[in-house]
Image 1 (cartoon, helix red, strand yellow):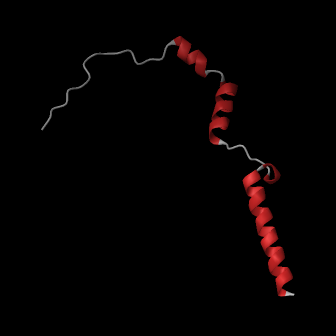
Image 2 (image 1 turned 90 degrees about the vertical axis):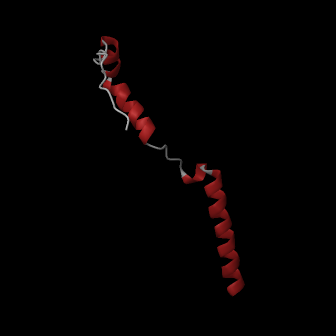
Image 3 (image 1 turned 120 degrees about the vertical axis):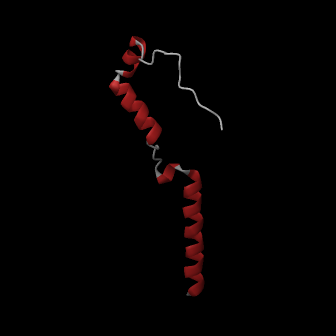
Length: 69
């Protein structure tokens, strides 16, 4: 079995002042978070694939209704 040795070199784990200042801009941080987590919602009439799907479904329903008369 392999023996693990604790990390003997004591690296400084504290963030530098530059890193702290970069993260203090909460408006930018919130904007980046919103941009990553929220999808932009495109209106139905601007999405060509979805519009074409609805158009074809409408044509098919119209043909079914006209055929059943």
